[in-house]
Length: 69
Image (cartoon, rainbow, N blue to C red; front, top):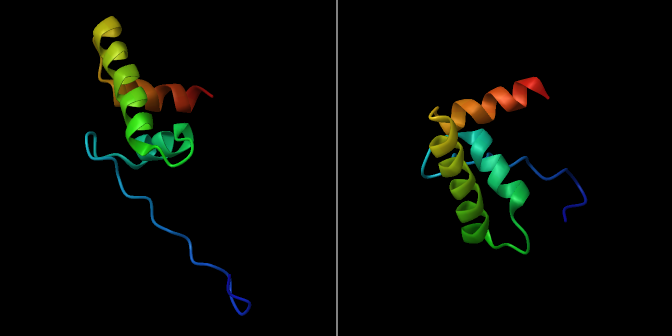
């Protein structure tokens, strides 16, 4: 760690499937021990089940849920 200045904030790269930064943040939150592929599989499976059950776009449902919180 640098003594002179703080570390710069890293920019979050959008996720590869939906191209959305909030989904990437969710994946990073779910991730444990650096296992990003496992976290992506969990999130994308959950999004697929939301699409199958409700018929609406999963990212839109996710953003609606975040707005309601």
